[in-house]
Image (cartoon, rainbow, N blue to C red; front, side, top):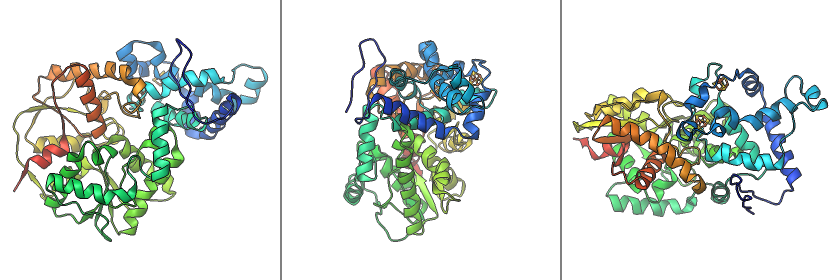
Length: 435
Ligand code: SF4
Ligand code: SF4
């Protein structure tokens, strides 16, 4: 079930048949469960300095106070002070903080889903070390429990529940892979009983963007890696990470690790996708419940390692380029230097964006925002920040290392009638392999 907002109100959707009271209760129950030591410390330590507001691309792009990170978390903060703070009984008894209402939760949806990509730029600048992006993720978990998430993200959730992957049933993988292999003239092993590396794909790479999968195959084959894709674990999925269905995300991520163990792979290779890196690399151990038995790495790390080890060689392109740092692999994932080493191996003269590396601006589409059609106008405003910085470099190439960033940037460019192509670091390597 989905319902439309009243005229003039922020857009929201709701799923299921819970009563309003039950939705509020489900959200509050989830919020209270999230208030562990770390979240509580974060709730208690904000000094309202406003530095995070100056870092948030949605606030910068719109100038609207409602898009400041602190305002974004106001309902979560109220829930904390009423239910879990040291003085919660007193706060409730004296009515010092009101509980969230259903109308407030509905209106909140736009603030934590449409206008936040969980990019962590606010987290980076906070002098108190408050991880606002992580708190948004926890707030989304409560909203999912209450059946209050954007409908498009709910639709993707239902598909993943049914198929165990975001967009492709596992049994379809061998046929899809065969077609991609034939179309691009590369060998793509599938369902091998054993391999060194389990290779995963972003949903788009099995649909409209198969060149990225073919590029990965080309590089892996040239490096002489024994690898395979596998229908029991292939989707570098992040839907549960983005929509708040953390139980689903745990199952999706676990299927990758379990499949790698089953075939004896020591490494799970993630594609050029940022949030999959967050969901699988950084959250996996928590969900797995113990140390991971496999190494989970991003494609950028793999390229960097293969080049450093001399297992692949690349031809120098020898022109200027600028690089969009995907938030999840650079700011939150630590791959700033690895990405630049690959850019250097391609012989690019790198002209950095004004905001780059860990301080880079988000593309505006992460965290499920690009899948959420009603957020498109906001996303385009954030894109304009990026476009201005790219144009200021005068670089001939605009490169990134995340497929979702690329899709977001391409959509922004199309809307703005901007004819700068957005190039994939992986595809550039694959297209310029030297003998
Ligand atoms: S995570 Fe990014 S988009 Fe979300 S509030 Fe922080 S800076 Fe803004
Ligand atoms: S930067 Fe940190 S301390 Fe300052 S207002 Fe934002 S969350 Fe609070």
